[in-house]
Length: 553
Image: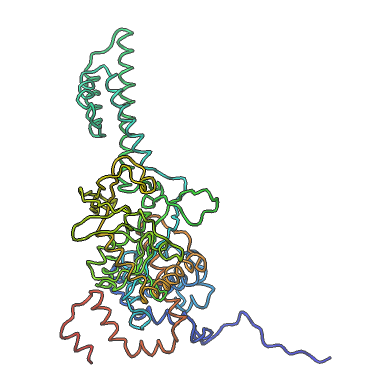
């Protein structure tokens, strides 16, 4: 029988001259693009976070590469990253055989939580320099992502205010029951005025002093009276602590209506992912993102559930990153308000932002309500409206309103002269007296301007792209990347975690859209130019003569 010859198999043999780590990694593998990209980032501010004394730390470039590559592959656990640093050739290549443990990896993330936003900005500027984005348009949308906090750790503002009001009455009643001149005077003086924890501290101290200075009780009745006073004093201290707790709850909530005890920055919101189909609220954050060509160009986290109130500050966030506003803003009807339109108008932005009834107007069978103020004829010169019966509705005053964001709106009131006996009264309105309408002329002007932009050729193009811009990014984030819930407590750490995710998301998409050899060639030729460009753009250096000489060289 012919003998079969096998290849030599000595799995424990020693290699005298080790081979290159990246020998088995393809030339166009995303890990190589990540490696080249991070090598060209400005990390001077990250280096400043380390102390010159003590044990030598792991290199920040290596740590950043490892964490970003993990996020690119849907790996968010530090323990899992620690394991892959010993097993996966891609992680071993990025780390250069270094093996930081999970605690070190987590500490690095927390160390750079204030600088990771600058790194995200630099990556976006790389995309702009590559020509993948222009930073001239923002496609904006928001989604709610659940916090790590337990869903049963809620504190509701309305409940706290209700219980606090009850506690105030209980304290007042208790002070009236205490047979002491000090307590009686304070209860009488504070009629209709709220008690504070500091005031109750003063009352408790004075009552304690009066008990200590009182003569030793001798009779049974005197001893019983002292025991009653001590019991009442103990109850007063208990209520003081409860009042202090309620005040602390209200201070943490601020303008919000709820928060979580385990994650005070999280607010209870209705999530799209509702497995029980019962509308249960869960602690979470309102994540706002701006995209272009399906790259994330900006992001911010809000405790406010309403998208309308987040737009001005979110547009300011874009300016703080890139030192200018976007020329074009595209968003859905959740952002269409007078405050938002005014903000974009003041800063010369083209607002392709829908208002609340825009979709109804675009339906083929849409017929406007003839009795709605929007359908009535308005004489701008003489400032009056004409009702469906031809009657003039004259201006009678103005109404001032304040939004929850502190923005002041003004509406003009118009009233018909005589509605009695009108044959259209039942269809027009059913209240007594003459009909009164309220019209916000500035908002109507902005809506008309938005309607013209949205129905133009460019507007139709932007409306079509908006559906495949932030919506697609959210779909990839939650389902392809399995990023449905935050893994940290506190807004600063949640912001840090999503910044890492956004950087990895952009790099992963750039890998799919860019040829690796082309990218390497560009980086080799434009290395000095690009680094100087980044420094000037994000404010590290001021443009001067030496800079331009260096750039020309």
